[in-house]
Length: 161
Ligand code: FEO
Image (cartoon, rainbow, N blue to C red):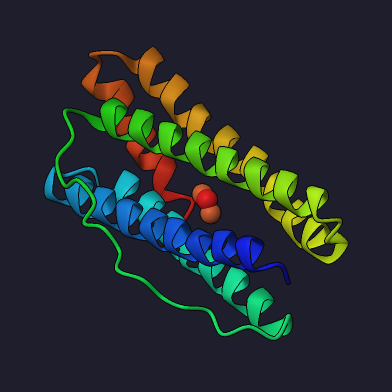
């Protein structure tokens, strides 16, 4: 594999691990603020992100490389509201989608079709990730200041676990 593409894919391990860390942090904030349904939703999401990091690691190994794990930044730990947290999650997912977009472009330029095929799974997955996070954002916007509606959504989010 091209050295620059290896470096970019290696960096993606960090992006996915940070995603897991960010959502775990959101989960602890929700739990501390008595919204255990949203906390559970974020914990499930964190688990999925950790699996995404593993997927990138395993692909690099299959291509004969040793992945190099780097320091993971500390995520934020306070948000203004459930809506604020989910909006931050959606912005983060858009950032991750852009990362995969760039990786696919890079793999195409190099005519590395194995990497293009590998990355296509993530391109599809990101559509789903943005959709599920945006659904929460839209519902929380509709709930507005209604405690009852927000509690209903918290209970609904619990079902994801
Ligand atoms: Fe694995 Fe939500 O990006």
